[in-house]
Image (cartoon, rainbow, N blue to C red):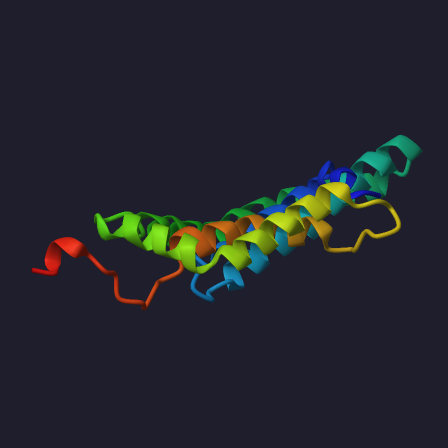
Length: 170
């Protein structure tokens, strides 16, 4: 399965989203809620949905009924787990654009991190150019991290270098 084909599955989209959020660095290391949300979606919802569809088609109605109950039972924990990281993620995005110095930080980060940005772009092109032979298991996750690191190295990375402003020189 190529990278594009793996992205066509729901599991690939979840892996891409998790990689993207981790790559941005906006959770500041507090990823426990993100991992719980990912596991709930991946195993309790997606896998049981697959099991429900296949069991219903094959005539194994007790397995289908149990899979439906498991999905229904895990909807509320999924919302609770997924709610835990969404608010800090949104607030951290909002704090990155609260004053005019942010434009300078973005320009300085682009200039200082051209090599990391190039690596991220190359990782994304590798994802779309992979054949079945070179595919890794976590390809959509790595693609998400590459996209997220583009945002990290341009917007979210705090720059400790002093910013030179010719207007304040005299």
